[in-house]
Length: 254
Image (cartoon, rainbow, N blue to C red):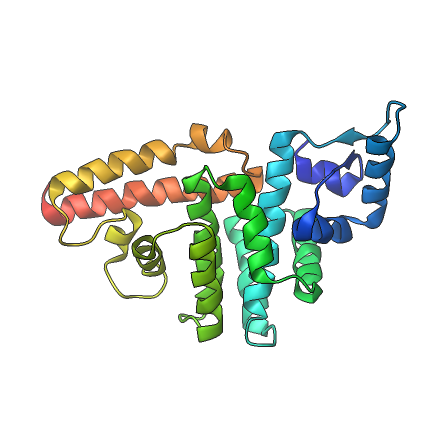
């Protein structure tokens, strides 16, 4: 059973603080937190399992993703129906969450919308866990951009939060612009996927392709502390890299 299944079933506790811990506790029910405290504070062996470090990282990623999406959707003061639809499509199509998983993601989203914590607070706590894993940070930026651009554009309020995320994550402006161009047409999206541009040499493109397929190989991603629901999304990125390289090779006659 995945960590999400355990949490939904109420068979596992967690010791996670900060804004992500507060939202997760509210989304999964305060009884989980109370039980966890009994396990962690009692000198007697507890009956409830606790999260492993890998499962805790998965909880952070999952909760941070839907919390930051909630803050971006509320950036202009209101959460629009189109934004809700974009988040729901992401849950169903990209992550392929089952009904219980979708309900859990919605609970996290709602808790974060009403949370007094800022977008930056969630981003900082997320980065504290994944700061040494740049490919996981890129996946999070991809998640945020995918939903932010669901209507084909990014509002100034949304972009301010996205740019704040790039600063917190130490994610370069060049990488941000390339990633954004996948969703908002500015440059050839296939070059953007490969983190190159149309002026890059054939050798630079080959080198970048080899680097990316190594970083995003499914076996590596599964060992990075990513929730299994997001591994599907990461695997799609791996396929996207391969498809982009095939397109560029054909275009250039490599």
